[in-house]
Length: 229
Image (cartoon, rainbow, N blue to C red; front, side):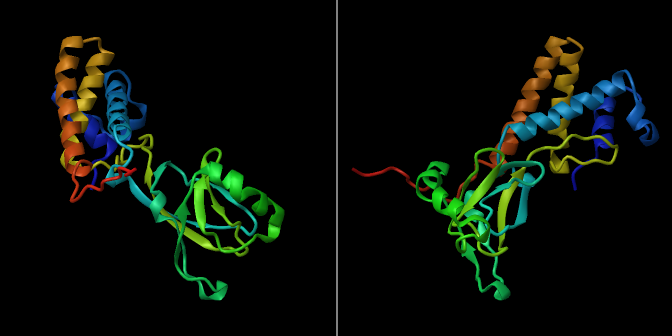
């Protein structure tokens, strides 16, 4: 289980030989303790921003479609979708079985399907066949649904701000040392200690690269996507 916000802060405080934070005082600390909280936040943000698809940020969402409605907003804390996973869910009362939606470009919807979807209005057209990126913060399906089908898909979460002492980061506890190294870098930068910040940064970047090697850069096979002419 990932470490809590207060545990990470106290690990950093032990590194710099400062008094640890008591849970009851966590929300109101000042001075170096408040600085450490900010440094931990920055380290968590940097790690999460370094990759789109960290497996510890993986999530799944089921969207209930509205008859005649083509476009929908993303769930809270959405970062990036796995477009190959959009699937109509089986429902015997709606007369529909599992059906994987094919991802298409938004421009293709504009040119080939949008007019028909809009003409159908609130009655919808059929069971959707395709999914596409919406113009904004969401996705769309086409043909526009003629029933309230359910679509399930997988996506990756963005990081969330840590606030309370017991909030967790989703980053595995085994990599607390990476988070602490990152917090040390930001702490030294806040204090204008450039030499110490550079040393902490090297350690932090090495830790992030190790995380990428373990969770991202491991492939059982590679697909050749070159096109023969």
